[in-house]
Image 1 (tube, one colour):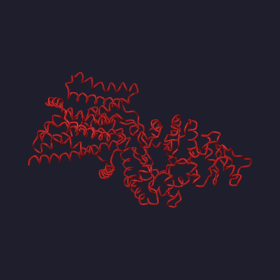
Image 2 (cartoon, one colour):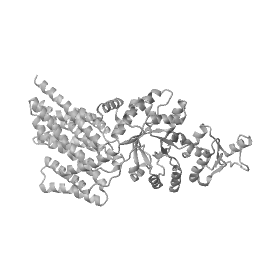
Image 3 (cartoon, helix red, strand yellow):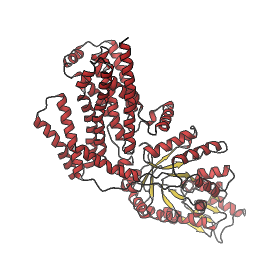
Image 4 (cartoon, one colour):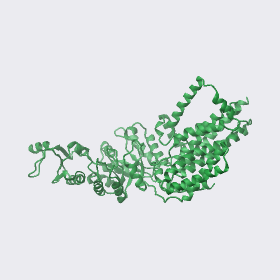
Length: 627
């Protein structure tokens, strides 16, 4: 009881922080907006003003590149020999006494004089003395032309004038450079600081690295803290994640914003309602606070863009600024120790339900958990230990729910009247689930660092629980009172071909089940299942898990039916399938980056729907038996 109250206290802190972290911002890609403006024959500032009216609050700006300037006719880029020939032909006017270096590269600017100065000032800390500017129109560098084309040129003021005119905030997308130093990072951020109305940075570039990686990340963190700029932490798989970004997030969790982007290639295959649903789901259920928008290409995508922005406007208030998590003070150690005490007590109860456990050993188990928690806290291994303890709780409590319900299962499996069966099956599911749900809350309460809420740190071992707990639950049924002799007989039975075929089929189903389980299983869903998920999200607000309300919870309700049908030897199979739902609730709360209220609603919806489906099955089986 004390451990449960302590867990509720810890979770109340988390809920309060989540309630304050609710503002979702829509940020438009500036390059995509420019393409759309071109297709509609509009000025970029007018296109951005239209975006602002549609609820977009900011734009993401990539670094300027030489090819951008060449394509727009603002510069010519050439090698020294080519420049010498152009000067000789009168195509380019050279400064008095100037002689091109054949080994250098040159950029000739046309139009606004300040552009050449801005780019030269940006490149100088990166290339040192290899950058020279002659007048307002000729830039010389020792870089090869190919290297200069790959080099980001910063964020010149002229590029950002339409953004300022539209009154939008700015997210800079700086690129990393190989071998960049801390001094260079500091100089770059000095240059970035000249940009008006910057809200934060979303690292970009072909290297897929945070600026400063690998050796100057400390300087990047210091600069971001100095400017009080946020970091866009893109939701990606571990293999795709930007190098160095996790280091920055750990240093600056209070400045980190989870970001969701749909790639242009993926978006092109989806209808607007699907794209809007992905953004809506991320904002509601995964602590996504920055939606990175790219409009559909036009001509051809006019209707899609209209529908997409209308749908987003229904879910998200316009022009909000992305909120970040506060970093709270560590919770009282006593609350954590009480949760550990509950974990030890649960372990004692589980073992006592299966074996003869001496009282002294039980008290040792109860005391060992808080003692180990205190020791790990002292030696600064608290988070690691709490993560392991959460995994242990996730194993113990679903099994405890099953073990404490075995007598009830046996009793209900012998009942004949419909009313008694309905009452017993209801009690079986909800009593078992209450214990499992208690374990889920205890485990979630131990993972209170902001890095869990941001999805950087995760509950580990979900797949192990998903496979191990149902098997152990089935074993508990087989080893229960009056069944151990049958278990021995089963183990001594000869192995037949159909046994092998059944085990092979079960193995395949088990692999598929594991692939679809855990924090990174979304990519294994079929396209039709994704559509169904969207429909359920829109219908219910929070989608319960398919495996829980369609399979596992009905299976737990119907497990006694195996006894009614004369198949008592297969009760363990019914409990094994039902235990999947018990572990599923642990899995639901293991997604710490999902708001607590969403996890609770998802679990309860799954239980209610699964319970109702199971009761329908009870009625059907009973009616058929009486015919």
